[in-house]
Image (cartoon, rainbow, N blue to C red):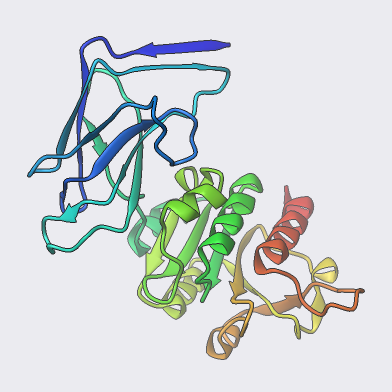
Length: 266
């Protein structure tokens, strides 16, 4: 299917996270987050607004054009912005380009209430953006309902995350909490089984029967799940390995466990 989108007069909008002054804004036709000579560009004004005159977008097959904004000055803090922000191209309305929105614990309650089955992924200490993005990609593909991360000590959500998640970050709710422990207590109160992935776990994931309402915790490659958090898990499981290398990349390990959960339950 061929799709051709023409903006007859102009495209206007605003970049917010401050707002951002002097941000470089362009229509990313090929989805690589890199400005190319033929792509339309502009900069934001003193209030974060931008205007693109007579911009035209055309594509064949699946359209992945997005508005991208980067650099600039955060008007609230006066600091340079290191974010890469993205938004879909919308016609006949003011476009707002802002950071990927995240949920809080109250939003999570609305998400899990009255659902017979729920699959959540909790990430403890995953700081590498490429690993985080790859995990998000696998989680989105395998039907995870939401990912829970800590506000501190977690990977930032930036352009690298977007690229390594193949855009999956836009389709999967991300919940930020003050402390992972608080999230675990909350989930237990809502009858969700907490399973920790631990290379020293007493049970193989293939011998474990997963519940319909499950939250899987994955820790960092270096130190795994924090011991105090691991103690709060209902059970811990391992991935049986047969090679000479004794560990897996955390994004690969996450995909293996999620695939087994989906195989069993869905």
